[in-house]
Length: 324
Image (cartoon, rainbow, N blue to C red):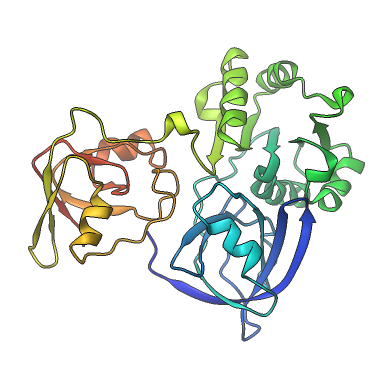
C-alpha cells in the first residue's frame, strides 16, 4: 500500500455517456504526473472520507494529465455519486500514485475485452499496443449506444480494424465469445477482460472451455457480485492483532473485521472496497498466518503470508503481528 498522496486539479469534466463522466486530472503547478503503465489505477480520496479506485484510461506516454471514467452507481456506498454530484472542474483532489495489478504481458496477439465501464483500462492498453504497432483486437460490450462511453476514442481503432462494438439491444452486433476465445487459443493470445463480475466470469469460463490457460487470462474487478462478497463464517473465531511499532495488542471479535475493530479502538487503516479486491488496505504481516479471503493477492502472495487485506481476511493463528 502506497502512502504517497498527490494533489491534482480537475482540469476538465465531460459527460461521456448516460450515467458516465470523465475527469481529466492535472498537477496544479503544471508539472508532470507520475509515470504509469497500461492497466494501472489510482485511489481517489473523495468528500466524506471515501477512497475509491479508478483505472487510468489516458495515454501512458503523456504525463501532463490523468483521465478516469466514472459510472454513476446509485446502489454503491457513495463514491461514484460523490464524483458525479460534488466534484466540479477546478476542484482539487487527493490521489495515490498509480499502481498496477493488470499489466500487459508480451504477446504475439492480445485480445482486449471491455464490458461497460470496464472499457477504461482496456482503452489505455489499446492505445499502448497501437503505439507499438502490436497485433491486437478490442471488443467493447455495452447495453446500448446511449450507455456506451468513449466511442470517439475507440473510433480510430475501429477504423483500423482493431475494435469491434457489441450492444445488447442490437442483436446483429452480438459478441460470439466462444468463437472469439477459440481463435485466441489458436493464436496463443494473452486475454484481458474488465467489467462487471458476471461478464468477467462469463469470459473466463469461455476461455477455459477454449483451452486457454488461466495464466493467459488477465482480469480486473470493480466489485464482486453479492454472492461472492466475503462474509464472516459460522466457524470464525476471535483472535488478536499486535502492532509491531508499539507492541499494542487488540482483540478482533469473531463477527467483526480487522479494519472495523481497529478503527473502533483508534487505529485507522485506509479502506475502500471492503471486499478484498482493491488493495487499499493491504497491510504487512510480521508474524502469524492470515486466513486470506481476498481476490487481490495472487496465490503465490497468499502462500508467502507476509501481507493480507484486513478489510475481509482474518487469522489462522491466535495472533497476527502487523507491520503497523
